[in-house]
Structures are given as structure tokens and as C-alpha cells.
Image (cartoon, rainbow, N blue to C red; front, side, top):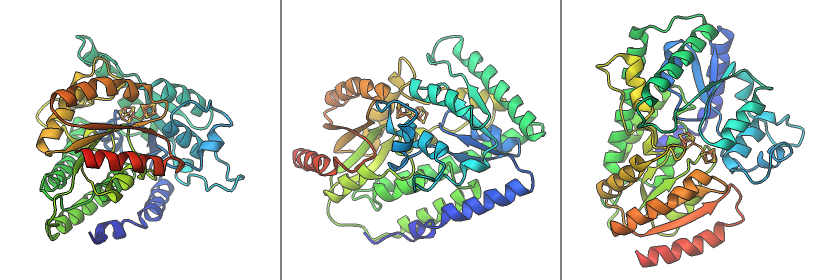
Length: 380
Ligand code: BJ8
């Protein structure tokens, strides 16, 4: 498939966005950095602040992080931390948007992240949202609602703006519009053959928490228009779903391997995938309650029990008619690594083959993964 114009269009989106953030900052806008999809954007925007994602997907900052952190924690945490503490002296380019951040809004999810946030407190103020990790327990929703209220107050304090219900409703509607656009894009991926490669979709998904909302909407509309006009490939290619850890910006290793070996990725069950947009926020309820109800249901592996995730995987596998699932985990991500067992059982019962890949951000295992993907493609 020819390279997509939308991907070309987004090539210099990083520098444009940095420039936009810089201008906003000069005019007094506050900038919030986040690491996780449990943090409701709607509250940040309703307070009149801007938001950028800080998760690292690049390998080159990991050695910097390892001067502070143990080696045996996940590469996403090391890459993110390394980008932030990098002073540029080692020759690795430092993260140009971290310096603009006024506040990090973090969340209590996995242990590695929790402990990283304690260290980051030395670099920039942090507000941590505590997540009830048994989301279906009777007290969980009210606890989370209180945490979101606390977060709302912190945003009001930071920006000096009152977060009104009206403003929240406006932001919820706007975020739902983006979710609908992602659904339209994924609807197109249900075609067989799929008219778009998963690697290209991932490049957009990775930018969803970095671009401004307007730019994201524009890019998604461009992409949908473009994909609707794509001439169909004639041959059926094995339809693969990726499931597991997020793939932060800079990390497209596994989708590239899968798609260079004859498969096409048609869905991603991950936070750089369906988990980020699948469920809308109810626009007809009290906005804070609606946000709490929507966000508490995100099926991250930090939640227990997490049957919701298994159900979602099976639903996606059916809807997207997948031939196989690549279960992707980052090294030392215990939550997703352990959940693999239940996912594998459920997929086996549904007759769907699964390939398990545990990897990091380096290229040292590209060949080895390629050989295993080849064998998987032959089997499905
Ligand atoms: S909602 S998946 S974005 S926490 S890969 S740092 S889990 S050890 S990124 Fe995540 Fe929020 Fe959950 Fe999504 Fe820890 Fe695992 Fe590393 Fe991870």
C-alpha cells in the first residue's frame, strides 16, 4: 500500500505542536503532562489548560534512566524517566516538551509507575490520582469520584479557572467526537482485506495525547477520507489483533515485524488502541459522575479482577474477524505478563491462535521475533 498522505502530513507535527505549546505558555496557559489514559482529559481542558503525554517509546533514553532506576523494570517507565532527567550531555536529545510542563497528573496503576512518580516529584510538581483497583467493589465508584473531585480542585488551583459543569459537558462532547472518529476508522478496518496497515494506524494513535484536539480531529478526518478511497487489496492477509501493553510514540517494532511478514493488524486491544476510545462518556448525566463511571471501567491489568478485559478481547476478535492474536508485553510488566494466562485460555476456548511476544525497545530481538511470527503466520 502506498504511503498515506495523512502520515506525511503529520511528519512535522511534533515541532508544530511544540511551537503551539510554547505560544500558549507565553500567553499564560498551563500545561499538564500525563502518563496514562486513566487521567480524564476533559477535566484538564475544562480548566483551560493544555495537555501532553510524557510516555517514552524510545530506546535511547533507557541507559540514562538506568543510572537512577533498576534495570529490571519495564522499558516504558525507564524510557519516560530517562527522557525527563536527560540533560542532553550524553548526546541524546532531551525531551523538548517536558520543560514546558507545569504539573504532572499521575495515577496509581502499576508499582513501577507509582515509584517513578515519587522520584519525578523532584523535577516538577505532581498530582497523583489514586485509583481503586477493584473497580467493581461497592465503594470503588464513590472513592474514584472523590479522587476526580480532588483532581478538579487541583486544576482550578493551577489555572485560576473554575471548572463548571457547562465547560465539562462541552469537553465531554468534544472528546466523544474524537472517540466516534476512531470508531469510524476502526469500522473501515473490519473490511477484508483491511484497507489500512496497523502500523500506520498506530502512528496516529500514538499522537492522540500529544496533538491538540483540533489537530487530532483534522488528522482523523483526513485519514478516514483517505482510507475510504483506498483501492482494495485483492488477497486475504492474515488478520492479526495486537493485545497487551501500550506502544508509546517511537515504538512500532512489533507491528512493523508482523506486517513485514505478511500479516495485517486490524485491531489493537491496548491503551494505544481500543482501550483509549472504545467507551464514550455519557453526555446525559452529571458530568463528574459520568467521567468517573467511564474511566473506572478501563480494563488495565492493574485492575483486579479484570474479566472486563477478556470480554473486550473476545468481542474485538469476533467483530474484526481476526485469524490470530499477538499478545504483546513489555519486559518486566508483571500485570500484562500474568494476565496472558487467562487471555490465552479464553482465546483457546474461542479457537483463536495466540502468539506471545515479550520484548523491550531495543532491536536486538527483531530477527528472532520475525522467525516466530513467520511460524505463526504459517500456522494460522
Ligand atoms: S491504563 S496500561 S497507560 S497504566 S507497561 S508502565 S503497566 S509495567 S503503561 Fe498503562 Fe495506564 Fe494501564 Fe494503560 Fe506499568 Fe506495564 Fe510498564 Fe505500563
